Amino acid sequence: MITSSDLISSLIAGTLFLVLFLIAEIWRRRGSPDPEHTRKFVHVGAGLIALTFPLLFGSHWTVLILAILFVGVFVLTRRLGILQSVQGVERITIGEILYPVAIYLIFLTTELSGAHGYYVFTILVLAISDTAAGLIGRRLGVGSFHISGEKKTLAGSFAFLISTVAIALLLGVEYMDTPAMGGTLLPLISVALVATLTEAVTPWGFDNVTIPVAMLGMLLLPQYLPETGAMNFILAMPWIAAVAAVLAILWKNRRTANIARQSRVR
View 1 (cartoon, rainbow, N blue to C red):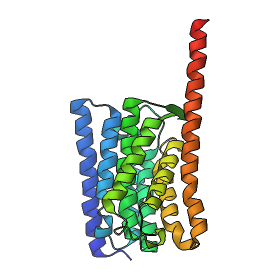
View 2 (view 1 turned 60 degrees about the vertical axis):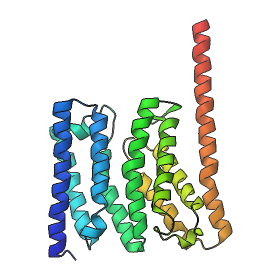
View 3 (view 1 turned 90 degrees about the vertical axis):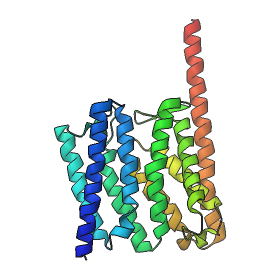
View 4 (view 1 turned 120 degrees about the vertical axis):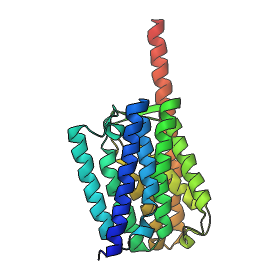
């Protein structure tokens, strides 16, 4: 049920988002920055605003309405070409359209499960780790690989992983209510690996949805798998997949470099 308090809160949140877009547009027009920078600025800012949702809203229905409204705004501005601070990047992406959807899914899932600490963790990873991967990956460009035509890098993935682990350490196990995980950070690091791998293999901005889905799936999994052996097996899979992925990318890049070197010799 939507209350008058929720309506007031939605006006506050909506205003904050509009101010964020306005600042990004002013920055773009007066400072001529890389569109990726203004886009990431909005990405982080929107995530930080979304952190207040559990305090502002008592019902997920209000968040759903906000998400639908902002999806509509992004679709309209994309067609009109009037929000270039967010949509002026050269790569193919619909991430800004999926971002409000992701926030709603995270809010709904954590509200239904009662795991409110997971909301903060997932939102911070989506806002900060994803941004770190994009900016550091573009700057360093180490270990590049392509997913459906989109360039990714091992440097970006490593930045995502370190950022996610740092967020987990900052929040702490106790804050995120993880007794089913044995009260240690090791399972959370496995969750960080899952999120990192998900970001690495998801193109076109769909990672805004796939990252929280993968994270919440791993975070909520222990309550459905009480057997320690089964849980340990599940948590071991990301480590195996990560090692295999890194070795495959390094082997492919080395093979490409060897072919290029042989071509120059000839």
